[in-house]
Length: 636
Ligand code: GDP
Image 1 (cartoon, rainbow, N blue to C red):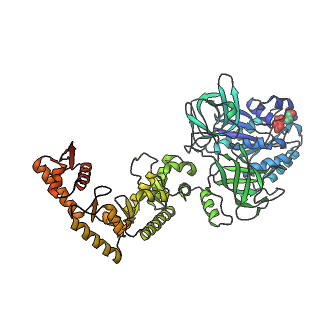
Image 2: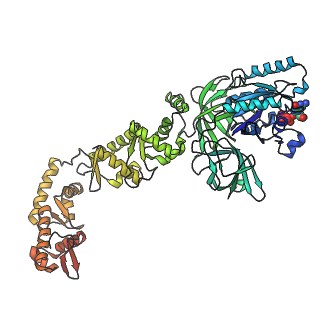
């Protein structure tokens, strides 16, 4: 199924031709029928003798309605360029040809209408030659020409034959697994509710599916689908489609909205595009100029940033960045047209290279056009890589929108990029649902690793006696989400770059080493603690003596063992206590605090702290006044 559009000057017979071909009067508004002038899009359809069916979009030819025309030409596969034989090329013939060229419409037929009004065959040839001179250099320059009269029917058979030959040459639209329907009409039908129409692109839609209207995000469900007034269950790319939406108020939808699956087309307010200024434009396209953008069926106001020069002169092509006032839905490779809002004029147009640039590009940065040119050439691996660039570690499922692909495709391409070393895969630890693959581009990984290395070095320099940064502190300094942080730590540990122990993260090669003064203090303290054995000085006393850092170092190194906030034993005394308590309980079965205290010839406060500590470890258990061996005791 294909979609063919009309184009050409007002009154040259487009609507009459469509009606003669299809039997359908495409002028839908009473006003249009009364004024005999198409002011909005008209629609009709036709099944050719060879069985091919086609939808026809009839666009207005009047200068004042050029913007309506633009909403209609986006989805067309081929065009009928209509020129009245008696009048020949007129201003809107030229403007439409220029727009078709900007939009990349390269298939079509030149239809010389009203042939009944010219008797002279030479005149017809002259008109055709004139049309061809307008088409010179465009994709339509070699289009076949057919003369017809809608009034007498002469030439219509030849036109149908030409159409049938042309459509056979046009490949079916691609299914990229990301359906979108740029809405060109919205209306409400009694008994059905909201209906939108458009040409379906890039994927298929089925009855019953949940959809959203982008960019507004309004959610709805497909209640019914029709193509050419036939009910269908599933629609494929390239079809003219009427979609009956349930759960959507007719006032909530507008021309230019896009029906798609939720989240599959994130809206954007920045677009990178390669644009050409029309050679007949009255002015160049200037940096910072206000423009009206047409993409799909949408139009938006915005500002244009010309990236490598101050202006794009008529006939020139350049990369620009569009900064839109309101978000729009667009994808890489989409064609766009730019108009000056006032006085209204078509200035140029081109192709979107990046629909989701993450920032305003620095002007005259030579890397920008290189990357964009590559993207435009369309290597999907580059697309995915570009989406990942500068994001740091990111889940694949969060890249599919910007990379313009479905998850399955992204997973496959992501694997190839991991294999070739352009992406690094990090293991998020828990869960391996698809889309949970965490990746980071090579430069992003290096940047994050270097930043972490710097933080650890600084921490080691500031706190030389500590084994490393507390894990939570590092996580919040790096600003990473818990799962991402855990995956990064795992990767860094695998690389041997850092290690983690007791909740502190340090550089692998780092060993806390006391200065000679500190070492002297440490020796003094340990002598004191060891001499006191089962009745050591309090933690506060020790901190007062050696300072917080040395005290923490002694604990981290295992020379001191804290059993409560206040009570700290030397390593030997602690080991002897743990052994001795268990031996006593194994021997006696149970013992009171007083009994245990006497065994070690110390005071109650030490033994209470020790026993609570051992209870917590499961080495002892308490029953009233008594202690017994706990489940984790080594004795029985
Ligand atoms: P559009 O603005 O291009 O859609 O033009 P229309 O289809 O509305 O036609 C404009 C006028 O030309 C109408 O009055 C038509 O009746 C007339 N017309 C269209 N086709 C023919 C034709 O083949 N022969 C003649 N004599 N008149 C035509």
